[in-house]
Length: 359
Image (cartoon, rainbow, N blue to C red):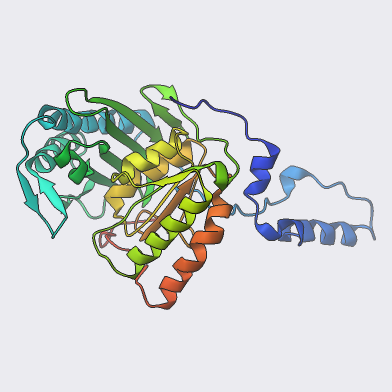
């Protein structure tokens, strides 16, 4: 069930402030005091709110400030058409035998992944011939100097699809100068012989919607009352072990931690208010570009797992309803910092050469 837009509470807003916000004065307050002190020598000065610079947001927005020269409605129309085309391919194949190949020991790809991506590309290239495209299966194609980058996962959750286990999805996110501008995720729900889909879409500044209805993150304010989700990659290394330990830790203190197997669907669940948070190491841009925008436009918050400013080329992500974000980072941040000290690579990856960005 979709959660509808609610006005944020004072408690919710205050929970997004830095922990030391009540113990120290922010720079904008100090500046105002200095101005008042200097002006006492001349005449009383009344501070005007609109003339004061606001304190910086603790978790910067990930969305592009604009969809660029292409209107949001036009961009969303093509994204939704492309996502539906890919979903139609999957729906046709979902209850039929699969032809499975292996990219790694346990990393699957099916003929359906490839066919889904091909029909998605057909829609995108028909409408925007000069855009750059990064697909999970097909790699990078198009104009590397384009301000638009399409991040496409034609079947996110291939292992689930191969076993007929929900959840899996089609995920398409479009970046404008490196930041998410529009997104659509088609999630497959139900199970064998009773599959259905729901489409979750968002645009920068335009809100997030599921099947046409506005959605909003949950208002849960305690980890103890939260349902959480995470994921694990195929490399069983230090980052994998760290997240196994986080899985155990949060299982002990929350209502539960799920591992569903489709990052895009996992993030839409946060946007829908079904779950309160999702985190994972080493996702790719095509895994995250759509989901992070949906969460943010549904009223949630996005950061790296060390609490830093997020881009879709980062190697860790934490999305939440915003209210419990700081509580989660208290436990997720320190072990992530430990991984960095061990030399684990958290630099940007899969960012196309020459692709213009605003970061």
